[in-house]
Amino acid sequence: MSTFQVELKKVVDDSYEIEIGYELQKKLIADIQNGLVGKIKKFAVVTDSTVKGLYADAIVDLLKEAGYQADLFVFPAGEKSKTRKTKEDVEDAMLAKGYRRDCCILAVGGGVVTDLAGFVAGTFGRGVPFINYATTLLAAADASVGGKTAVDTPLATNLIGLFNQPEKVYIDIATWKTLPERQVISGLAETIKHACLARKDFFEYLTENMDAVLNLEREACEHIAEVNCAVKYEVVMKDERESGLREVLNLGHTVGRAIETVSDYQLLHGEAVSIGIVAEVLLAYKLGYVKEQERDAVIALLKQAKLPTEIPEYIDREMLVQKLYTDKKVRDGKLRFVVQKGIGDVVEFSEGVFATPIEEAVAREIIMNM
Ligand code: GLY
Image (cartoon, rainbow, N blue to C red; front, top):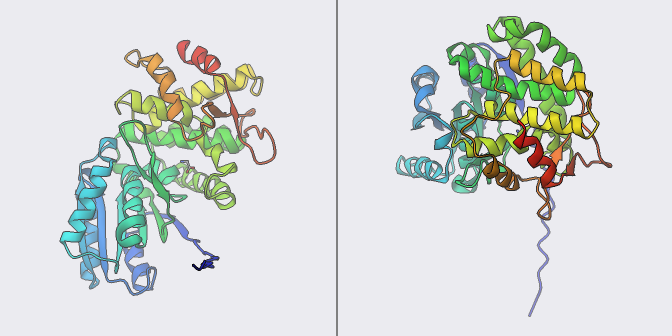
């Protein structure tokens, strides 16, 4: 018998642009006309029930006016829709409408939409291009940038997915005005996370300008959109597949993701991450990497942003401790945490290693006392 060596070494250019601005719908259409996704003429616009009427319908109309085929694929708004079932529903609906490999997926919405649509794009017909048009602060700060796409499972969030980079990301700051206040606040948790892990000056900016941020004043919005993208870009460029550095973006997420699931999504993602940031700054303090004053400043900034900083009474803390083991950083059955160092930095435990094993008893003590 014979053996064949299939040589498939690849040089891949997954570079893409992130455009930050106001009312970018016409710019999106112009980019498509100018070849953003080559000669593709069919666009599956994936959105949720909230964003449909606000932005997605209008984008479909603009695409049609420009001579493209465009159809809407809508699912109910909320984290509970981010499932394999919704992915299947979107895929089946696309197939029923005649979509095949010659299409592009356009995600219009927040993090749930961009995560789910990006995952659909990664597997539909073995992969079609996708574009993210982010309409929430959370999607702008984190979800739409960096190519992590996924759905949740009953066990935990984001366990099934792909690294799949978009063709372009549009961050339309004008859309933040239509967000309910709770969603704006939720988006701020990822923003504060970026300040804690990478930007002391930004942490100070947020402390001094939180009212302007909460009032969505133009300059403040532009600044936070730009710094969020810069932090993500600096990390993702160096470690797209999370083999080391990218784990820093998990600050607050070991506890955050667990509590989000245990709350059965009563907590929004950012609210859960805020509580996670508190748990993890308490850990950093216990390990001697942040001073008391720095610990208090982190908690104070989260409070200034009107984010929750305590574990709600209804959370089963024992279940929360067990849920920590669903974290993707767990290795050999051991919990691993990213640890903040002062404000604006994280601990590098050894070269390229940014998460450290923590005994369950240590995590449990923090959780039981929050
Ligand atoms: N949301 C964390 C990351 O993009 O890696």
